[in-house]
Image (tube, rainbow, N blue to C red):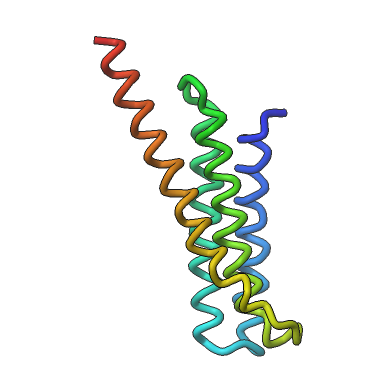
Length: 127
């Protein structure tokens, strides 16, 4: 199985499962700001899960790097937000994860820049 399809489907699945858990169970025990933060992580996880699934059917040269940027970026970005948001209920100090979130965001941005570059390059070749 291709890694982009696997992670795309996995991210979409986890977004639904964690989203349900966030809306029902965590809503009762976490502050509103933590719930909102988890929602941001969930949105980005779902967006990039869908992007990976779409990427898997596109014919783009060297798309594996775009997939790698999306996968690593989503793991760093979304999961650092999830862990930071629940640190009060797991009683573990996780503030050291704070810098991981923007690093993940940079990976996501690099993935999108590379995708745009590949589209532009592909357009020039096909003309």
